[in-house]
Image 1 (tube, helix red, strand yellow):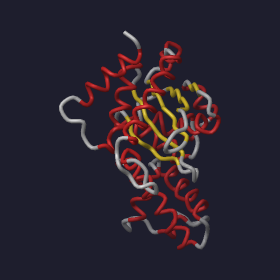
Image 2 (spheres, rainbow, N blue to C red):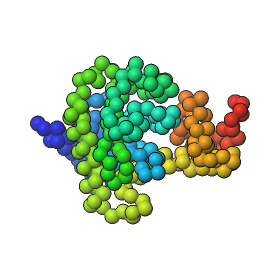
Image 3 (cartoon, helix red, strand yellow):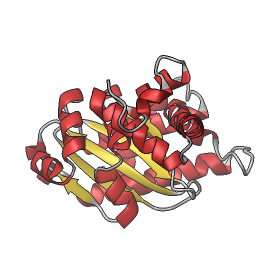
Image 4 (cartoon, rainbow, N blue to C red):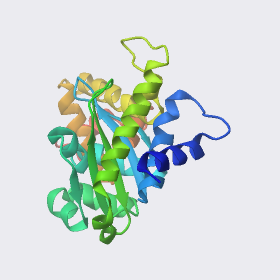
Length: 244
C-alpha cells in the first residue's frame, strides 16, 4: 500500500459520516498524519506574510498544547523549520540543549519527549510546517522521513484543493485558516495590542512581556492573554520591574 493510499484511508476514517466544518479540516489532516506515520501526535501551522505564526490544527489536546508552548517561549523546532525551510529533528537531549525553556514546559505539560518538524511547501496561507511528536525519543530514528515529507505534500494539496473549491474573501483567506486554534492566537495579538497601548510601548515588546508572564507561571501565552482580555490580569503587572 502506497503512502498516498494509507493517508487517504486515514483521512477517510476521520471524515466518515460527516466531514464537519471546513475550518476543522486541518484537525482531520493532523490526525491522519499521526495515524499514517505512526507518531504520537501531529500539528499543522503556517507563518503568514506578516510573520505571524498561526496554528491550524492538531491531532490531540497534547499536540495542541505543545504548539502553544513553542509560541509561548517564541522558539522551538517548528519555528526553525519554518525559518530555515529544512527538517529539524530534536530528541529530548537536543530540546534541552537548544531550546531549554520550551523543553522545560514540554516535559512538564505533555507526554512528548521528541519533535520532528518538517517545512511544508509555501502555498496559499504562507510558510507551513508539520510537527510530529513522540513520547519516546528512541523511536525517532525509525521515522521514514521520505514518507513524512510525502505526507506533508498531501496535506498541502488537501488544503489547496479545499481552498480552490470554496468561496472566500481575498482579505480573509480560506475557512481552514480560521479554526479554533487560530482564533485563540488572534486573541493573543489583540491582547498584545491593548497591552502596548496601556504600557505605552510597541506590540512586539508587549508580546514579549506577555511571554515572560506566561513562562513565569508555567502557562501558555493564550491563557495569559485570555486573562488579560477578561480582566483577570492587571496589565500593570506586565510592566518591567513589577513585583508579583
